[in-house]
Amino acid sequence: MDVEAATNSQGLMPIESVQKALNRSRASVYRYSNTDLNELNPPYDPKRLNPELRLNKDDPLLFHPNEVARFAQEVLGIKQITIKIQEPTETATQELLKAILSELQHIHQLLESR
Image 1 (spheres, rainbow, N blue to C red):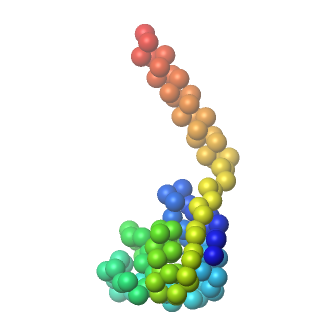
Image 2 (cartoon, rainbow, N blue to C red):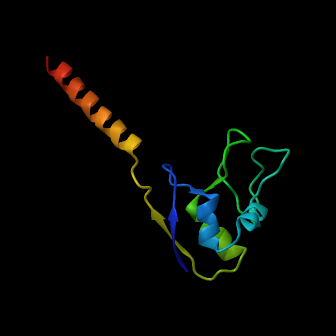
Image 3 (cartoon, one colour):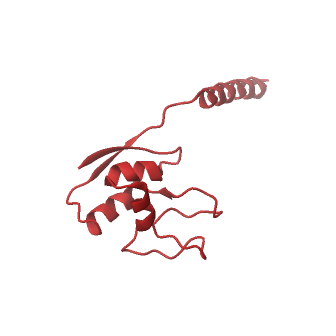
């Protein structure tokens, strides 16, 4: 199974991408996830889908693509799964930040040359 998955800027998959990759409902993905109401980051469980570490209980669950592929093969029994990472589309904010960075680098070069 080949799946193109959207990721965030750190290359991690949100619930919606995992749902698409596993072809399961959102509720199923939450049931598969290694989460606990009393513990922010429970220990690794090879029978569950392990999210990345969170700093706050309100942080969204994010998953590494390799963990999603491992879970699909080892736990769900999907024989072959390939997750192709799709770069997020660049937003106007990201374009503006790149332009600001470029301008600051140019100013830095000018100051260094004097």
